[in-house]
Image (cartoon, rainbow, N blue to C red; front, top):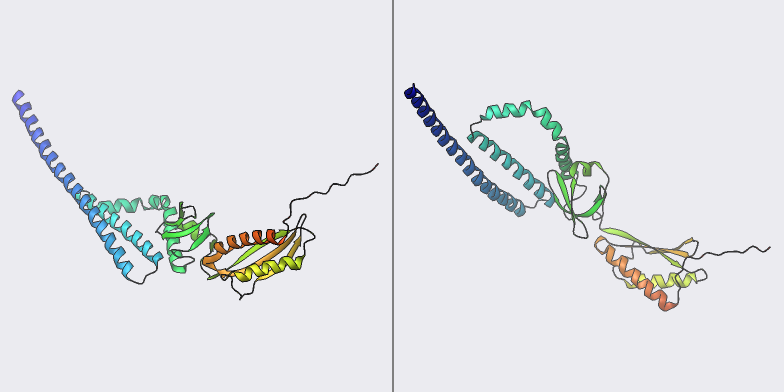
Length: 276
């Protein structure tokens, strides 16, 4: 009896060793394929980016295609590793098909984002480099990926906006048109000579070569407010000059008004005392 048990134990141990060696070799192959695959994917991604950069392709399309190629290569690598581990790809495909509904529901948001990315590339409401506002965020478009659009804000924050929400909502593109209108409202004291104020503002505008003369600058008395006479000013500039002109004219008006003796108003409240 002891001999039989010893033989069974020896047989089981040899079988276990054989299976362990086979499993070890399989895992080693899978690990090797994973390492080599990641290296190949990295090289192919660089090659795709280099090919796209050499061609006259919109930067938005370049980032989208690069992101899509990377995802597809990772999926192929995963399928290869599954096959090496001994899981038949047909069974694996059948498993994916049977779980398709559940996966589709779980990834419905990402599928919507993928479709949104395609819509953005097709209709081009914006492109890489444009300054846009959408979904409560604003910034310069850095990349358009398959699921997200990446913005860089003026204070250098990075914002990821899902393509589905971005393509389905309102988008303001500040870079699409070559010209933008700059608006100011300057308040002066009641009693100031309006013609003098208008002349000073007109001369300030005329000295700034960035301000276009066509369409012509517009200066008008806008409103008689509670504590001030408000003068509205509207000029047209190149889109790239918008903020520089806005801040420079603010400074110029402040300094010139002080030099010319034009007073800025302060909030005032007149109180009438009733007499008994």
